[in-house]
Image 1 (spheres, rainbow, N blue to C red):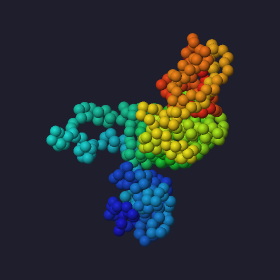
Image 2: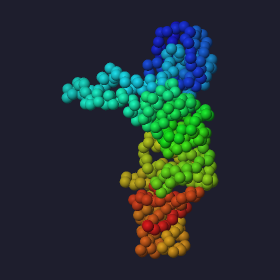
Image 3: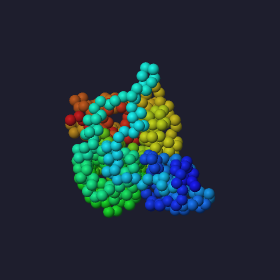
Image 4: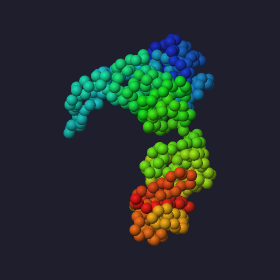
Amino acid sequence: MQSCLDIDNSGSKSGSDSVGFVMGQRVHLTGDTRRIGTVKYVGAVEWYEGNWVGVDWDNGDGKHDGSHNGVRYFEAQGPKTASFVRPHNLSSGVTLLKALEFRYHGESTKEEQDEMYVLSATNKKVSIELLGIDKIQNKLSRFEELTSVSLAYLGVSSAGPPGHINTTIPRLKELDLTGNLLFDWREIAAICKDLPALVTLNLSYNIMSHDISGMPLLNHIKVVVLNHTGICWKQVEMLKDSLPLVEELHLMGNKLRGITDIRLSENPIADPGKGGVPRFVFIARLAKVEILNGSQVSPRERKESEIRYVRLVMSKCHDNPEEIKKLHPRFAELKKFHGIENEKVANGATVPQKMSSSLISITLKCVAASIGEKAPLTKKLPATTTVAKLKILCESFFKIKSVKPKLFLQEEGSPLPTLLDDDMTSLFDFGVGNGSTILVDEEC
């Protein structure tokens, strides 16, 4: 009798297994803690005896889409990301302390030892010995002294009995749980409550449940990493009440495209004075945002922001499509939508050739207190004009002799202007486009 349907056989046991799995539970293949998936079905499969578990694999390495022999059992994330597996070939994970014991008290495997070698001049493997390894292992074995622990990809699925974690690792400040089987926020709450000294928690690549109700107040956590956890903005808003003192929140690789209203006040990422991202970049990257920091995003501002963003990416990444795809997922979509041509970059240039020969119309407003009132000036300048060159021009335009200019880009809807703080950077690279307004202030 088969132990797996539509995947390679990984066991010989047959008959009816005791299932013990529930929908939405995270599991890994027995013996392979990196082969992780989500339980989508538990029960019988037509024409086969016994119980089966339908798993949708994270890495997409399956054989079907949740159907078998024409019968639909569940919906998978892709056409070949799912498999039916015998229950005994799946693991529901271990407690945090079991993983801790394995990670820091377990002996190195033969495979790990075999990897510790260098190649000699004759290309032969020569085993190496790490100096001081005994001292390191001895220190790591004293759990009560640990302040930082990494339990990545060890099948952690629960906190275990209350109080046991605190008794074992009471001084822990940083905990990395990347790639485990955690999905229930109640287990996360139990772990955090048992670690009162914990400051940093990394849950990346744990596909978390959307049910965050009942989360207790955890006012000692300051850094939370939730990259690739399937979390959406609604869950982020629910979490903020439980994590009031969080200073850093990492949300890479999640589904946040539906945001329509976002406020980033008093946040370094949106503070031009601290090198934050300009307003037009936020608008371009967030396709559905309608209100940014309390200011309405008009159709005109969206169009101009997206065009400026595309050209900014083109000037920075040049001809590196892989880098663009990774760092700027909306680039190709926006480039096609706005009909922006492939503008080649000349050797040594920082902007496309077409842009380098074109002129942009900008308005200069003098706001320096010591200069006095000056009428705004509208000038047409090459997009390649550097900030240093523009400062020199401003000295001429406004008859400034004893004042050292300081320039800011004023963007529509942005409460604070963006400092143009790099003299060698071009206006184009700073996102200055046709119709932009630049404020001319003075150095303190």
